[in-house]
Length: 246
Ligand SMILES: [Ca+2]
Ligand SMILES: [Ca+2]
Image (cartoon, rainbow, N blue to C red; front, top):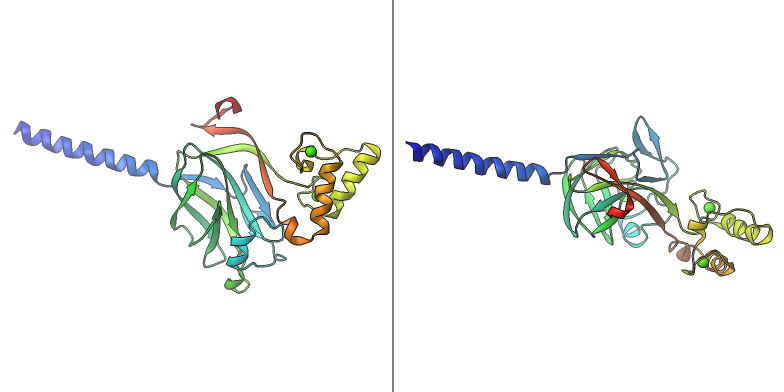
């Protein structure tokens, strides 16, 4: 009788452990679309959701695969810190379109609302892009409410910036070249983090030359001017830790 009881207890313990493990891996942490560590491009916040701009141009899935960082393509970007390189589970909550395109690294997938999906992340900082409705969806506009991720992933404190964006308006264009010129002419301020383009420390005319070259050679080159993220902290176990703990 005691043996039977012990066996039942053992089975119960094993089942509980399996359930707990399963729970720990499910995407149960909510990262809000209007939260910190999120960048909105051609989306605006309404009632806590990110709403795609009615003015936005719908890209094809192929466009998204080729040019994820084109400022003219609507997307929201989540900055997430992964403790190790591996596949993690997510789900995305949205409305207004049949499916959403999601990109991590160079991989684009399409997902349905609230459907679980997996993404391969690198160890450290990852930027996950969730796009507006593709042109295959015939004029649909997406509203995102949140991305759900595994508890082991950490959201971050930091700031997105656009390289080449010397005047800090989150777009890289001719006005930034004018800002560089003004900076060298009269010392007026520019966003030195964004203005750094040549890989050599300090803002010099060489940085401006890179910007000019990009603008002169047209849109294709501007697409190489990308969204970047200045990571300040990672939120681990609900505690903000400083960047010595990366
Ligand atoms: Ca700018
Ligand atoms: Ca430089």
